[in-house]
Every structure is written in structure tokens, then in C-alpha cells.
Image 1 (tube, rainbow, N blue to C red):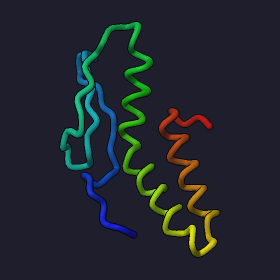
Image 2 (cartoon, rainbow, N blue to C red):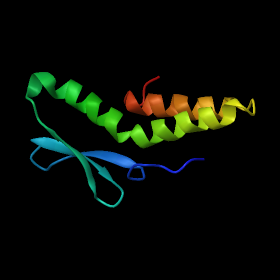
Image 3 (tube, one colour):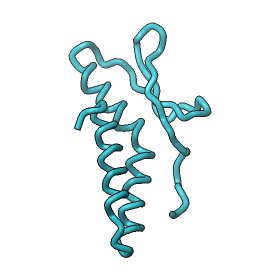
Length: 94
């Protein structure tokens, strides 16, 4: 597998104690991004964006696995990993 050019995962989405805004953080509490609250109407979209950003390392790993396994013809496991990462980005839904 190739070298990863980003902060290693896993990444997590956490809202602050007041619920005003959230952060996507790495396991070392390094802030990957800050997601300010854009109001109640935008809350579902903000949460969806946060889930997508938080799962980016898994999506990257799964995509790299597909590319690496393409030539060997062993795509089944790579596709399952990609499917799981996409489901996580969608909030655990398929």
C-alpha cells in the first residue's frame, strides 16, 4: 500500500459541550476541521458533512485497496471495505 499523505485515521466527529459547533478530530485530538453551527435548518447537512469528512481516511484506504487489488483480480475484500466506509459516511445506513 502507498504512503498516506494525510493525518492517520480514525477520525471522529464531536460537538462541543454547548452544541454550538463541532470538530472532526483524529485519535490524538488533532483538529482536522471545525464545523460551525449554521443554524437549525442546516444541522442535518452539517452532520452529514461531518460524517463524510470523518470517514475520509477509510474511504481513501478503501479506494487505494481497490486500485492495488485491481491487477491481482482480488477485488471482493476491497469492495466490502469500500461499501463499509460509504455506509459509515451515510450514518451507518446502506
